[in-house]
Image 1 (spheres, rainbow, N blue to C red):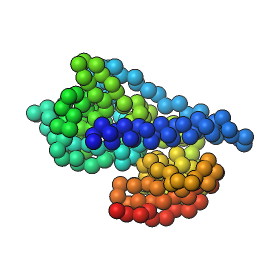
Image 2 (image 1 turned 90 degrees about the vertical axis):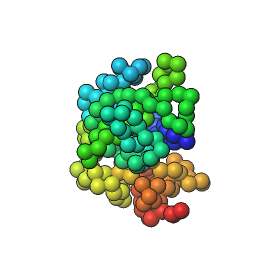
Image 3 (image 1 turned 180 degrees about the horizontal axis):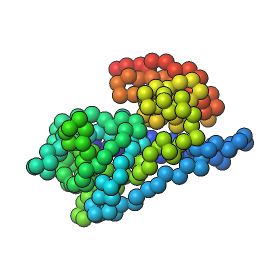
Image 4 (image 1 turned 120 degrees about the horizontal axis):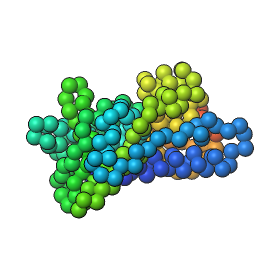
Length: 224
């Protein structure tokens, strides 16, 4: 379940990236500056290279998608039996260490964990897996290495204010909404012009209608 959830988040993020790529190819109006934003990637290949993530702050790309767990620094142990919560959209993290641990749900491989501090306590979130000294990282899909406020500094101040307050306003783009309330799932029947996306939004679901890539109606979503 742990790996399945992470892979789902990556698939959702890839879906969004594919949508942007498709719009690049089909846009006939003025080019969107978002298309020219190319976030830096680390491409880690082992624990030592992954420890570069401890040098500077990072920001979460996909909100409400990645779980984190209590971490006992003295025992070097992450308690996978107690999920503490989900990483928030555009949450800033100061990663203190990169370690490994075994989840009871996936005993055949080790989880590569990013350890961070929050509210005076330490937590760990998986950023990759290791099996027989073969590492696979998905940290580049999870994390921005640069402040997204700077990457997307062409967005208006009021848009960034709404994002930082985890709110969606009419007129915001899908990417701006993703930054505010996490990734949404498109309802059936939508297309590239008119579509409805449902956002879990950390237990406060929203349903947002888009026309030509911009939010036109924002409603409470279905619960349960």
